[in-house]
Length: 228
Image (cartoon, rainbow, N blue to C red; front, side):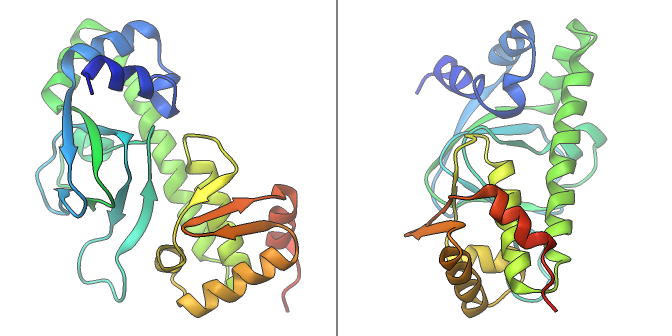
């Protein structure tokens, strides 16, 4: 895939689609393409800061630093999602690890190139700040979801969060039950029971590796229901 084709795809999804055409054009000149094989680590927690990255195709996983009990998987995302801005803007170490969940193509903008764009465009830092705000919102959604004590509500909250974070804006969430359990901090059996109940209520439909949200309003009602 050509870099121009990758930029065109990302220009229609997520954060980059919200930026002006001249900013996207400047990024096209400064970005490079980076292929990742399934299981390959893009960067690890503790690595020195670098640039920002956009998923062109494939899927990446965000893992918490080693030392947490159980799975370290905190978030997974596909095409259209950009990440890495905290270290890139602040200059500190990476706080998480990024691993390719499948063969993935990444568009990379190095930190020095971010600076070069900003020197030529006085509003560039505002666009990068909006990326930071966007991903901060995702982090807050994760925290909110895992604070639900009842497994049914926690899974409903995670599905709502993953649907909102999916840059394709479709009604389907691409996630396995094991990954959903890892992100929600629940056993696979608890996840299976919660999904079965949501399916019985006509709120979701399950298939291999995918959960389709049929009734978004119903999903929201689950979050406010009395589970006592």
